[in-house]
Image (cartoon, rainbow, N blue to C red):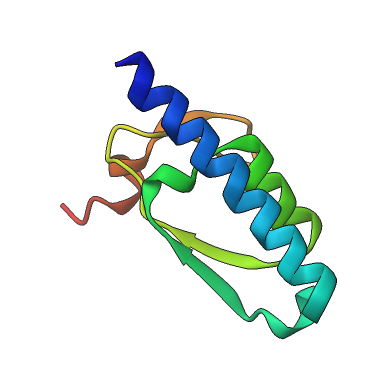
Length: 84
């Protein structure tokens, strides 16, 4: 649904602006970590958190693709967390 997609983009951009304002007022060093739902996955959002060295915990779908930094290999998230 295009309306839902556009709303998620709008919400994410507002969240980035809010986080940047918080950091400007209080500093990134006062943030231990951030917990978010999977709607907050995006290059702009994770890029901001990474550049400010803010740890984050974001719930992801099991079919989400992850790139292993050591090899560049793409794997499904469920494979990493499958305890079978």
